[in-house]
Length: 273
Ligand code: SF4
Image (tube, rainbow, N blue to C red; front, side):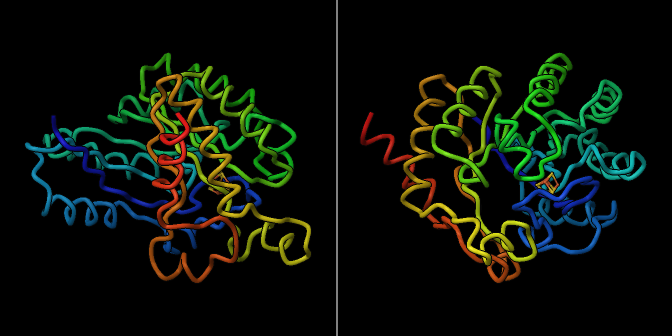
């Protein structure tokens, strides 16, 4: 079986109409400038110089912002760079991440025409009250509707959820886990909430109005969620955020960050199963 190789292209905060309580994408991705088509091409070339496209399954991934909320001409300029490599057989898929309220029929038809194969949605919680408290700017209904539409257009679909948001409890996370399970995504990512500088969460943390989970609490809650996904044959491809680069590390303030987080959670589930 061919190995998956991802070529990540970050589009930090691009197009995003909101400012979620926890988000400072520029710091998480360590990138401040806008991603141009030329920059995207240079990233692809750099990765392809070390990847054998015949022996691997290679995908370009546009991560880090709300891709489908970017100006349509900018979206298309970036996608056309990737599409050119897909047509040449040098890459085999194109994936991107976006918000549940930035999916429409027109958007999906455009993505299909430009060779996109997989869409990831930031769900974070299926409780409207938690979404509101964290300034997400969308509801659980947006998630349900956009997942149905994405499936209708036959894209692969991934859903991201968070643990330890403002107002969140273990019971809320388990509720979100069951709701996501009902939506039958192809895969899930689970991120414990971390506090970064220049975010609403940071302000609340400094005022003593937000207390992040400890690593142990986050492991325990994530293990419960992982068990539900495992029991329902839903792949969890990521557990925990990686702080890549100095910028991300310098802007991390508090919260359950642990480099081997995924390993610890998976072994917790394995040991109790
Ligand atoms: S929707 Fe995504 S990119 Fe936009 S503020 Fe929220 S987490 Fe950040």
